[in-house]
Length: 86
Image (tube, rainbow, N blue to C red; front, side):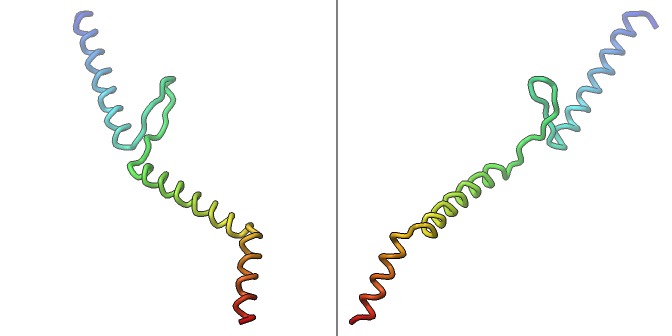
């Protein structure tokens, strides 16, 4: 085997290895960042999950406001007392 054929064979082997590696990473949801570190790709459901988390955080904020709002509780007590007095 002459040197030219050996260089071509090495290039083919490296290319096949890269293609197989890329296919494996794509099937398993793995990608690399700019520095070559492996990171997991975002799942297709991540957008929906982020919306759900945002919605639940808003609901928790409303519930916290209701639970800690003394003015509303006092107004409610006053209205109940007014109805009892009738």
